[in-house]
Length: 385
Image 1 (cartoon, rainbow, N blue to C red):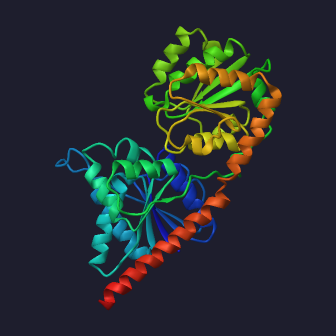
Image 2: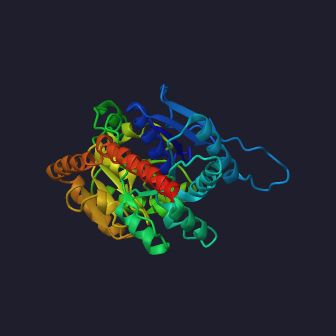
Image 3: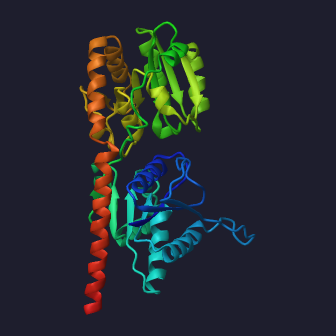
């Protein structure tokens, strides 16, 4: 099958999932064409079945804001026509779904009926999509997609709750590549960070307010008062200065390492004992799943898709958003009990295996085949009429 994939090429979860999905599809023999304004950062190896088409936006003085949606639609038309795409799969509704709809209508005028599948990832629905500025277009684009998927049951439910969606939404969860994320022996690395055998807690995010990184620091303050520990903060973003200031106010700077953006986050997870994700909104929680694949239990909030991944009392613990005392209590209980921590590590790994790429990839392949056949059948029915 020839598949066009549209995604954001940045560090966000939707772009990572889209890129890893495309690479896996290429390894299975499908021909995959990435269409975006910059090469996705995870598109890092050559394959005969992988192609990248850059969306070039000309700089015209007439436009205060470059019309990316229009240029993307034109590029989709071009790639579909000349590469013979069987379907277009867009990740993150805004503005990709509407651009794909426009491209589909243009192609129809030329006798080409290409199916469009839209995957909803989270903030395109829970944050940006709810904005009245975007909501009508988001609703229309989802309803006009030939197929729609969501990365969690929670996101599916929320989409139906906040938008007038008349199309079925298929839940296909995010996945983990165990060839990359797994528990490896990095003892020398661990000793460099925790030379006196301290426990290691870790948080990975883009440091936006919704990630509640300050809650991570507040929890760690209570933990380090009872358990010798270090905290690794991985990532960067607008909240970092405030988090750094909070560490100074709490006098825990000697126990906290700000590591910035890291490509090989799996090496940091491999030496960690506990992962923290106290987010105020999380449609899936891919970072938590990556930690669990590395046998790291999770302390998380109980919102969004997180309860679908992190099983309370088995793979970690769930707390109400902002309840730092409860999160600290559970963290201390795990870190101070080696036997319990070891059991939770095993449980986390077993839960993560359910989301292995080998299990999720066939779900996408089957869904692609079903939508392609459905669109063909609809086309034949119209011809008969």
